Amino acid sequence: MTKPLDGVRVLDLTNVLAGPFCCHQLAHMGAEVIKVEAPGRGDLARQLGADPALNAKGMGVSFLAQNAGKKSVTVNFKHVEGKALLLRLVETADVVVENFRPGVMDRLGLGYEVLKERKPDLIYCAISGFGQDGPWVDRPAYDQIVQGVSGVMSITGDDDSAPLRVGYPVADTVGGMTAAFAVASALNARPRGALIDCSMLESVLATMGWVVSNHVIAGVEPRANGNENPTSAPSGTFETGLGLINIAANKDEQWVLLTDFLGLDELRDRAEYNTREDRKRSRMVLRTEIEAALLEWTAVDLAQALNAIGVPAGAVMSVPEVLSHPQIADRGLMSRYPDVPGVGRDIEVVNTGVKLNGAPLTVPTPPPQLGEHAHEIWRALGLSNQDIADLTDKEAI
Image 1 (cartoon, rainbow, N blue to C red):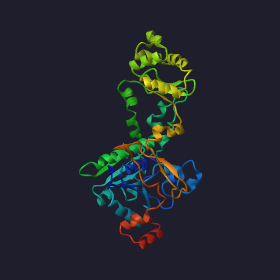
Image 2: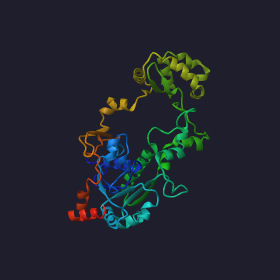
Image 3: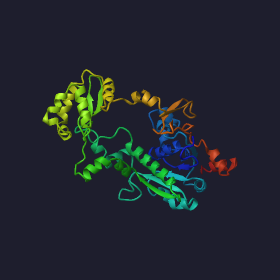
Image 4: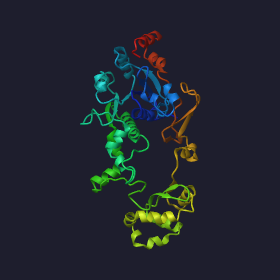
């Protein structure tokens, strides 16, 4: 199958998560992604993750998670010959993605204006915490910093626990996904050539449309609602006899179906539950009455029964539970790579969550060892083995 970005070359100059996650999407869409890393140490994510032995090998789990299908070379951006070699590589590329702090690439003499002289139709994507200008432009940004300043933490949790960090790096991944969308869109433009300024902060705020709009349009102060869906009731997380379940009876007809199923049809005659707005105001009392009728059920069985009658529901599952469920296990979300070099064992990694023409998007090769593709890439630029050895000795690559 020909993938949408077949024939596109991307230089991935990024580190840790937001940038690598962007290029992870592009690789699965068919782009040739060349990861350009610092000699000797590479992407910081190579030393991060829950397996110390892999961190010591420079193949940390955090790196493995979003670098499958990429090629790796090393270049010293501060060395004059390394810089010259990168410029030659840029001439062969369609896209450059970087997530250095704003101004770093310019100070290295490798900013957009310099690279555009070498490749006029280059798409240059700069991912940063706060964008390439503004009063916070010089601030360092990590995922949790952005979660905090974006308001995400202020609306996560409940009255007792908020503000609370989302349980995975949502700002990094949303920023990376936004950048990938922008790059893919820019590749479709004619003539090509763009400078993309992707702010993690703005990317996250853009996904908070309902929260932001309720504030700026309806004047509602955003707050943490815990596991309750503030737009409707009964809609949230409920206790069963065994396990938690999410029930979303958001429509009036679903409210009728739910109360009939649970033998609580008399609730519909009570003034405090008459309309959606009434139920929202009385949601906590309503929760208690519904949970009393759920004690004979397990969350898994109840979810199946409610979905069968048209009431959206789902058991609250752990990550291992959902990964082993046929809904995920049988659809090709995960890729397994046997005996990965530098790792010494099989690994599984997540793909993209997209199927194209019925097939999951996958990449054929595992995450690369540091500099694994040096000879392939540099020889294609016309360097001899001796040239490569000399540049290595000079610590240019």
